[in-house]
Amino acid sequence: MNRREFLETVTAAAVVPAFGRQQASSNEWGSPVFDLHFHLRPQPASNLAHLDGAGVTKANLLTRGDVVAQVKALEAATPGRFTWFNSYDVTRPDAEQVLTQAAKAGAQGFGEMKFHVAADGPELRRIYGLAAELHVPILVHFQEVDHFQNEGTWSTGFARTFESILKAYPKTTFIAHADAFWANVSADYHDEAAYPSGPIKRGGVTDKWLGDYPNLFGDMSANSGNNAMSRDPEFTADFLKRHQNKLFFGSDCSCSDGHGGAVSQNNNPAASRLAGKCVARETLGLLKRSASPDIFQKITWGNVHTLLKIPA
Ligand SMILES: [Zn+2]
Ligand SMILES: [Zn+2]
Image (cartoon, rainbow, N blue to C red; front, side, top):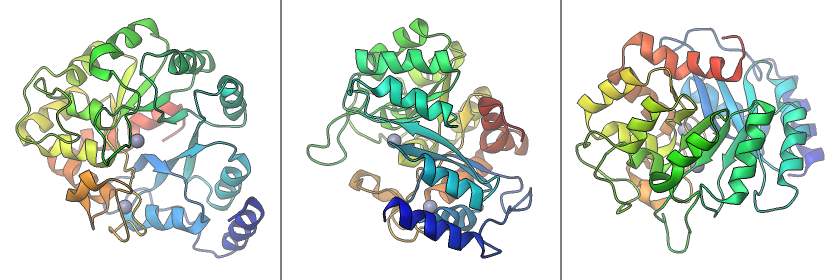
């Protein structure tokens, strides 16, 4: 669909009364839910279909490139349901300029940053600096193990080098996500699998750095977050308690209806444990079982409003 068609569709959809309906402040999860990690879908109604199907009140759209008109149209048709982040190829010379423009146009953060570069390389470093300068958070995908042949790795070197970045950019708000971030909750992880299983060995760098660095936050989305928090219930309850102010619920779910329709973890055969399931529903259920109502509310709603400086 091109931009003109998108705008026509969203305008037409806006006149259907139920389309942009704001959900009641409490819902099937007991309190409203904000999905920090939701990739913008080309069809306007399919964005809402996932939120409404999964019982999600609001979501943060992760976008790439020039999407301002598309996002504004969706926001106008669905008041109060969406915020947005923007991303752009960090290897291109105009990355800083384009991302600055996006922030000026209303993007509330940068992300998801998912590129075949080193986490401490010059391409990302300049964007870390820019995020601090513009007072917006930056969401980064860390992955060291391919999900399929020749996928390549993303923001590499997390466990080895990212502490130096946390120290070098104290004014940057980092939201870490994906396989390497979540596998490193366990101290015995050495990049042997995308999604390690079994009990967690205490003292992993992810756990340690969330405690030590006020500028590091965790995005619980995708199979990576769900898998890590499903390994060891005793560890999970304690981890959520200790980092209750540093974690955000997110889905990264690509299912069609908020109930596991179509494919929930696109292009990711290694995440087959979530096939036929909605990642949002699975992780919300897991959080509900693992945390007190108060902590659940922070992770799924309160923390992100503080992060984005928006009223809850
Ligand atoms: Zn990702
Ligand atoms: Zn889903």
